[in-house]
Image (cartoon, rainbow over all chains, first blue to last red; front, side, top):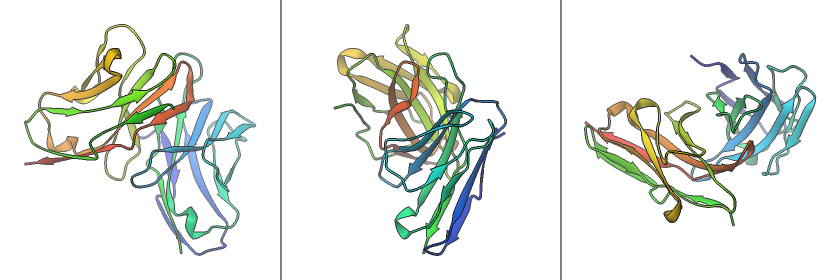
Length: 114
Length: 114
């Protein structure tokens, strides 16, 4: 049973469109993450949030933006989609405190920009 | 440079056979090590983790891994593979208390023959 939900699962969209990928978790986790996953490449962190109103960019430069207005919600937005944004986007969350609490991943959104 | 190497891109085993997936890391500090599994169309799920103590750690689904500091390795093992184990397996290394800085391997794709 998934406690972290991503919608849509698949999205095919034309160049120049604005899109928002949704991510919600019901576990009350403070930390949330967006990763980009491409075949043959390592997972790259593109956005990270410590908690409400606290976000920072990850190690991989991304033209996307995120917001964290509520603990459970961490949407990712692309203002103008391009074919180079075609990828799988994975959202994750983890507890605060303790030693490296495990990441809980959603099932991902596979984005194709035509 | 900090890195994680999974030497085997793809492995095929027969159902019931034993399995070992290799993971080697290069990390300057005390490594916190993880194995995650990604089934087709799903997000990643934590199999097991090593922080300290007993170097042989048990995980879910009958998996175990052994930390060998002298070899900078954290290999994943299972004595008898089931068809449902077919998936992508990712090794990751990080620093204490900081999931934001996880370094991921490229993954090993496991196929299981009936």
